[in-house]
Image (cartoon, rainbow, N blue to C red; front, side, top):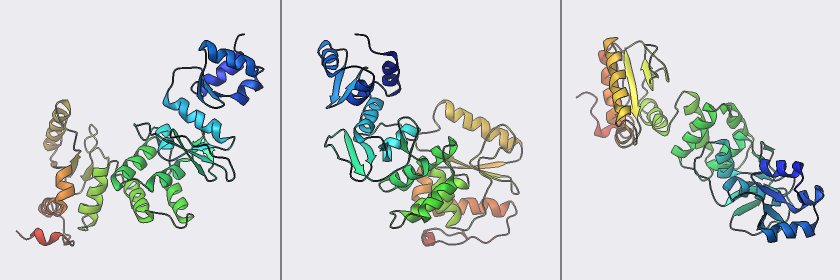
Amino acid sequence: MAVPEALRRLSVVQGGAISRQQVLGHGISDHIMQRFLREGRWKRITAGIYRTQPANWLQLAWAGVLLGGDEAVVGRRAAAHLYGWLKEAPLPITIYVPEGQRIRRDDRWQFIRSDRLGRGEPPRTRAAQTILDVAATASADELTTLVAEATAFGQLDPGDIVRLVADTPMLRNRRQIVETVQAVSLGAMSPLEARYLRDVERAHRLPSPQRQASPTGRYRTDGWYRDYGIIIELDGAAHHRGAARTIDLERDNVHRLSGLITLRFNWRMVTTTPCAVAHQVTEALLRRGWLGTPYRCKRCRLVDFDA
């Protein structure tokens, strides 16, 4: 017996996963299902769920949704992976199911009874809710990456997170989430940029540069003090080697020829000696006409701004 075309298309959409109920609904009996399994045309993922294609992670996510029922949705890190914010496909796969739903024990899935609105195929928690759910176990740097990725892809309005935080009592990491959203809203697109904003700029009350701006129309910069002709570049830990380093040099030369100076800081400098970084930025600003007063943060006893 041939598999009905509608069922074949459904299995493709679902990563090769189909449920017994779906198969029966397309006119294939249990007897025929067992024959397909014996012949190796289909394989059993778990009781009542079959696969028609080689095993893959998306198939497992669909299988979890099919096990969870009509209102089941993928959540937490698995949802973030489906959105494209996390590269690594997590296991177990979190599946939210309605209250009262029977939960199956299986190491491949983590079923949680909680009502969640879903979107997409397979259904996954909405963008802002996904961020809040992941934030419970994410580091500040990982959370910054998630929010920046989600915002860059146009899948998330940072304001949605702020509103959801306000409506969610007893939320873990509330302050960290809000500060991360604020940093990304101001233009921080990486954990390093967020740390610079928090530990260098805000901690020492330095003026804010324009972020992701292009002084010459050729290159974007991490920070540009337009009034003072100063550019701030932040080099990630695994970046700026080989060809990337050559591009950095070309960019710095173009800016230098335009009368701009570039201060370049790496991950270690910003994360271990932010006061020293602030001192250098302050010196550059003062020499270029800034009339402000540097502020000593709690860690500044190791840095002498008057030196």
